[in-house]
Image: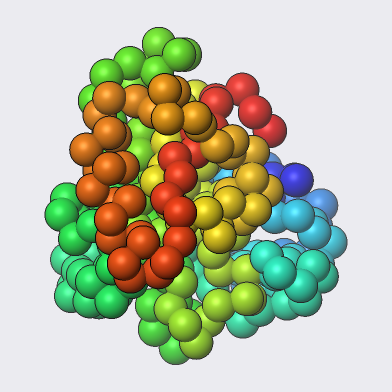
Length: 236
């Protein structure tokens, strides 16, 4: 997996955009679909893709980035539509809440500042996910995080949007342990990002209530087994 280094700066100037002090300009050797008036800046959390040469990157007016040609999670090498990753806004919450309830996920703790949204070129929300702090201490000694509410809208599945969101959320976690509770059928998806399944005696205490409550829901709603997974900060 390779990192795409540049994103757009957010400050317009006569010559294009001004890079923020913490994001110096860098040279990008891949195919970049930006207008000549844009400069590129090094982000703290660069997006990651599995096929660097098949991806072009373009700037957005809000300072985010748009990727075209995303490798699919289920059909390696296929491409998707233009997608912009951005922080969620309060106006996204009704869509997020509706999808979470539809997918029979935990509707509690849906705080907008924790969410990343994948938005299509037409402004439609294609998917989203969040990182929430988890109580207790992880083996690394850092504040552990819980990856939650990762949903791709049905019309946009099998096009790489889920993997794009997952990589972004993992990158935002920096060097913290990440835990998640999910259905057993999604285990290969998370394993592709170096998550590993925990035995019951390895599940953090802060997740035990959600885990045991979720077992009932998973069996009744999806006839599936519930699992807890962890990604250590030193896994690539």
